[in-house]
Image 1 (spheres, each protein chain N blue to C red):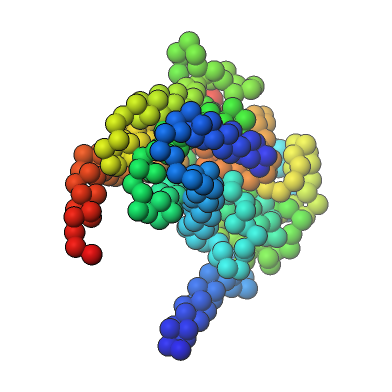
Image 2: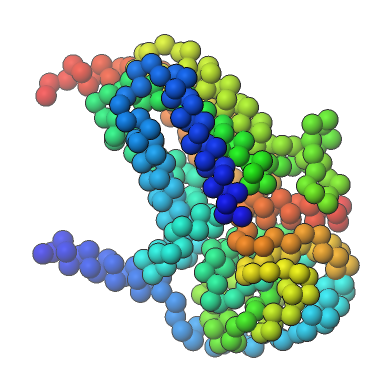
Length: 224
Length: 162
């Protein structure tokens, strides 16, 4: 089972690399290294937070950190990933903007990787493209493929936006959070999912896209 | 120096706060030991779907699953029977585990010889088995179960019942 997750992760990494090649304008040096570091940092932080939430002490059970299927806090992982990218690209707003479409494409592939990890299906549906688990009669929305298609489309749209500081980053964040928000009701869940965090992500994304250039201008003109 | 002392106190607090407390489960009664056929009869008599989690106190991934199963039992406990099967374990350690990881919200059976999962051809620990009303095995998930897989298969059982 862990290998299915690994395949999904490798698919995502390959798609991100393809994205960096496709949309290579203004891509900073070592972009791949920065993305790998940010992803690993996000995974570790997300896993640690999930373990603490589960009542498992990471200090006394360090081996369990690698049990990714045991749960990763999506919110913590995302915050750590974005923070790491912001930190490693500090002083170069364009770097984040340049990497945003590739990150969205990687996310799209991660969702599409459900075909390997076997968790594509969502709530029951009679739509013609709905399918059932093996041995089941209940056809279901392939919700993760909806998310993958949406994120792929968002990657293309973001790649065509202009270079106003933070615009691409903000739109990418709003798109990724928004797609999770609209597809969340189609996912079977024990408690409805972290929809509030997705709303916060959309809001921060929109604010970043709209007002990001003013923050950049303020920084550039402020006395040192 | 003060900073190091504060850090040390913090680490000790975390370690002792999260560490298991031996004997925590001593107040619990021993888990009933059942054979595979007795368990099968028990499931058939429930009259509703069941989620059976095979666990052990020595099983590291079982700890990660525990909060998930507790949440699932709280949410779906009125529609689905949740049952734990403790395998290849001792009563004392099993009961400590139940208390430490908050798994006291549903019934557990004791299966030291691992006869129950073997009966359903389910290998490894943890294993989560999903049964239709009447006790027919619908699906067996070997290895740690994540929230999506658990929620999806619970929904399958709910649809069966509906």
